[in-house]
Amino acid sequence: MIWYILIIGILLPQSLAHPGFFTSIGQMTDLIHTEKDLVTSLKDYIKAEEDKLEQIKKWAEKLDRLTSTATKDPEGFVGHPVNAFKLMKRLNTEWSELENLVLKDMSDGFISNLTIQRQYFPNDEDQVGAAKALLRLQDTYNLDTDTISKGNLPGVKHKSFLTAEDCFELGKVAYTEADYYHTELWMEQALRQLDEGEISTIDKVSVLDYLSYAVYQQGDLDKALVLTKKLLELDPEHQRANGNLKYFEYIMAKEKDVNKSASDDQSDQKTTPKKKGVAVDYLPERQKYEMLCRGEGIKMTPRRQKKLFCRYHDGNRNPKFILAPAKQEDEWDKPRIIRFHDIISDAEIEIVKDLAKPRLSRATVHDPETGKLTTAQYRVSKSAWLSGYENPVVSRINMRIQDLTGLDVSTAEELQVANYGVGGQYEPHFDFARKDEPDAFKELGTGNRIATWLFYMSDVSAGGATVFPEVGASVWPKKGTAVFWYNLFASGEGDYSTRHAACPVLVGNKWEFRRPCTLSEFGMTNRLPFLSYCCTLMCLIIHSFLVFNFHGVIQLTNTP
Image (cartoon, rainbow, N blue to C red; front, side, top):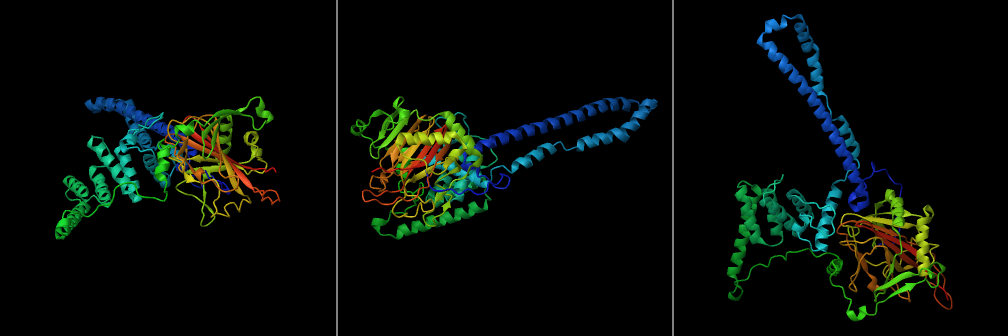
């Protein structure tokens, strides 16, 4: 979730600007139809070639019978004036027509269609982005390479397999990023599948070349030496492997000499290898975050659980909810997180998606150093903006939140709709501005953000939870519900326990709908400081394993 303005310029046609498919599952679905169209075109080409060959075959069979008869008695055959005429005609005219038929290029239609469609194809950035997403899902959900390769993911409808070549490509992507941990895992998987007899375009020599070096980079010199020798058994003339073998043996001999020259009490010590594993990164709570995404490490005790209740809520006697109150359920105590049941319809979701999809562009985050909006690897999605006047559904959703919370949405900004890509996520973050970000909302002319409202529009089989690493809370999507929490205390100070994250959806497609609001500063009274607040409205929609989020921002109206 992110609450900063995304400035959308002139939308270029897809032929002029690459859309970045890997950051949006919603747009990626268009590629399925593109590929289907190409397959149809390819089949038409094959049919045309088959028809052409069938014509040539029939002509050859006819002439085979004719020449077989003619060669038995050439003089008698051409002695017939009709045969003589037809022979002249065939050699002068018909063989030229056959030549033209053989030379006729039946691929024109297919090549033309392929050329047109290629401008909408993914590029290297998309392929690498999708590969990194698989590595991210592997780490977040503790999946081994064999499980992913065999497609044994929870909740899948369409099982798919990775070939040895696919595993090799994943390993190469990791290698390019100097991620030798994942390089080793995926090269070993590729080697394992080759050892099992899989027919592939790659060979064991290429795999062992990458694998041995990745192992060496992680400090396992003994294993690197074994793998290099195995490579040389397959290709004794491999130049790089022969060089590496000499280097590894030299290093090992040097370490042996160092150990021998050490004192007796240290004689058995060896150079400590680098610790193998995922590299340490910029996110200190990553372990807690990923555990919560898997449903582990939740810190709700039975005693606290007994204090959580269910109730009916009428929006402080709002006429719309007196006869049909909303159903409330306590999800968490500190911070207090409330879930509303049966609060939004699938029809509303589809309308918002249809409005937003044509406008999606790469989502951005606020750079605290430059103060500008930029893309980031920790947020993989696309977003678009919608205005309330464009469709009554947008206004109706806003009014529903206003009626249930008592917050005024009249000055709310446009609705932001985001769609997550492959392994799409938004790592732990705050919805409010901290003290070291005094100008976070300066461009918006607003104050801080007080609360978050999150709709869930369908159930999810795997992934997609909203987690709070500071308190060990996980909130799981449940169709037709919404959750709500405050980001600020009554004093206006930020509640740091509300730091939260959107876990990557393991299987599916994730959409977000959010609305930052534009508010002017309120003045001070002699009774109470009137602060300019924003309430973040977020809606997570999941449709047949597709996860959709909806965010909006509303003005808090203070009363004495």
